[in-house]
Structures are given as C-alpha cells and as structure tokens.
Length: 114
Ligand code: AMP
Image 1 (cartoon, rainbow, N blue to C red):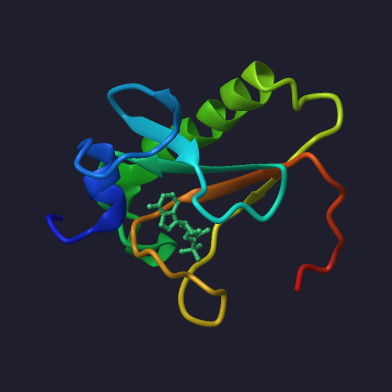
Image 2 (cartoon, rainbow, N blue to C red):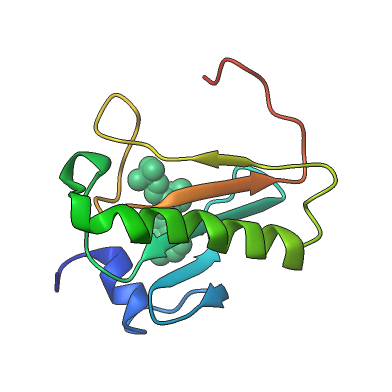
C-alpha cells in the first residue's frame, strides 16, 4: 500500500530506529514512546486491522509474537516482563491502519488499561 506509513517504513522510505527485521516482520521504536521501551512490531505484508486477517495470516500473526520474544530477549526484558497491545479500530485508538503490536516495557502498567 503506497500511502501506508508503516509500509513506507518497511520499504525504507521513511526512517525508523529498527530493532529487529527479517523477510516477514519489522520492529522499530515508537516515535512517541509511552514507556521506556516502546517497540512497534509489524508484518511486512499490509494488513489494515485484526478484522482483515484471514486463515492465510495465521502464520504471520504467530510469527510476530515469536519476534516479540526475540526482542524481549535481546533487550533483557524477560525478567521484569512487558505488555503486548494490538489496537483495533476507532474506540481502541488505532491511528495507523497497518496491523501492529505495541511492545511496552521498562515500567509498571496498570490494569484495566485506560
Ligand atoms: P495505534 O494508535 O495503535 O495505531 O499506534 C500507532 C503508533 O504508531 C503510535 O504509538 C505512534 O506513536 C506510532 N507512530 C506513528 N508514526 C510513527 C513513525 N513515523 N515511527 C514510529 N512510530 C510511529
């Protein structure tokens, strides 16, 4: 999708602080971090929201989570933990319509979320 911000980041057309990438996913630091660690994990494939997932996307959704595990290990987040968040749609606050996991760590988080 030529007009998608995260597709442009995945293509290297917009700069980002990349923390992990391979042929299927990319992870980069959030430009407006909500915690000391705030990483965005995306599939290279353009999928707007969770509601657009199909059976063909099962593997990539799982793979995004194993990428999160790898990033957690690389950043030494495994002992204190981290939060993974996917916003879907307006009420959840989704602003970028390219599927992404927020990976947040480095402070305590409350529950329920705001
Ligand atoms: P969401 O509200 O779930 O769609 O999250 C979108 C996230 O993308 C927000 O946390 C933004 O701060 C982040 N974001 C927007 N533009 C950029 C950018 N150019 N580089 C990194 N993160 C971005």
